[in-house]
Length: 251
Length: 260
View 1 (tube, rainbow over the protein chains, first blue to last red):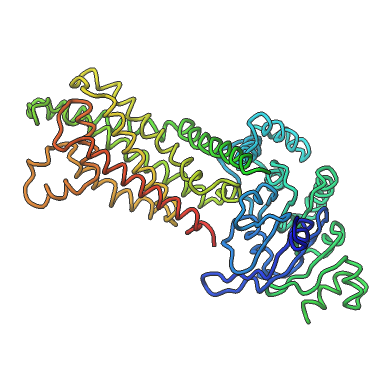
View 2 (tube, each protein chain N blue to C red):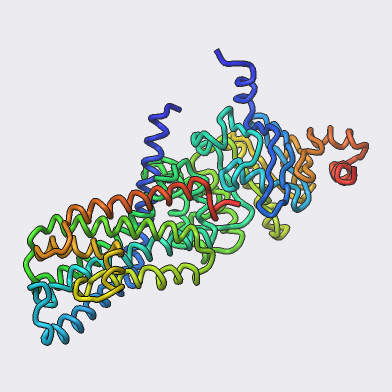
């Protein structure tokens, strides 16, 4: 029989327990951070630059060495158990795509690195190229795609191996308004189609309001507040999430 | 998911990454295969042809037959090293290594995949050179021994390439290792001369060079002539390959210079 603590862990898409990360230069990026993201939730993480958003995503996905504390993805230890990697898809903030491969191959090789068979990975690549309106560019190498297309390909790559938790690190940072709304449309579509949990980090309050069921404010490596946008607005005595955010950052 | 299913997925991932590395070697053949083949062919033409007429025999062998094994070892060593160092450095420098770092592959599987590309490049170049030159050289005594020596050469230098790719933070650093370590090792490895003909420290340096033993074992395989027991040479260099592979795996596991 599983202990209550185990059941609690596995019911959460992401459970972060007192996670601390200090970089080599002494910067404390995360300071005993605690976070729970329920399965199936579209979750927003809002915070200023340097608050720890990217570090948290990096540790969960294996891109950053962990510090003290524990991280569980659907009950699997994200640091020690490689099976957890299969459950996570990540679209980092910076777009880095293998320049030796075509757009279709970027997706299919990713699927195969995660253990999909070749035929299955190719079929999944075609499916995602279609979802993200990239089918016409299937044979094009990433460096010949527009910025918006590369961003879409990066998000598609995160989904190839059918993760249960997708982590999108500022997917709309530095993109124009038109593309931002286009990406919102893709993000809504992917959550409804794939039925997955989404962790979205963003600087844009309106983005979190438009997309997220729950939101956490992160400041100096700690969660300052967490709840639905309406709860947070009420908690900080403002009418809008933006007021709550500004209040939380000032506190 | 059972541990067996995870292992199957990891094996598939390893095959895919190794396939990606092999594909890179083949698609860039004008940069990965053609130059070393031309270089080795020129070495053989100049040293075997021009000097071979004056230097009749070394260790009882025509000069062309004497230098061919060493040139094959040099080709495998340099190309296996260059491929692994460059491919891993590119992936790290351009950031797309995150695709591999976020995958469920174990560190040893990542190392093995990169090593596959290095081995393919080195051995393919060597096979082409051998196919061109062997008809004019001494007949093979134990081709299996020569092939084994070349594979061990590839393993040692491919893993050194993986370590260099992890370590290097600039193209200059990567080139530095190739110029300061790999080239001197190749030139001191007894490719063009018999070690005992050198005096003083050079003879000692040659005998400290792991490439010397690999050249000697390959020469034993291709000509039957050797200065050290070939199986001892292979055993020692295989131990070096295991040590360098372990180091590469450890560095990947720690995320040294790959993860902040």
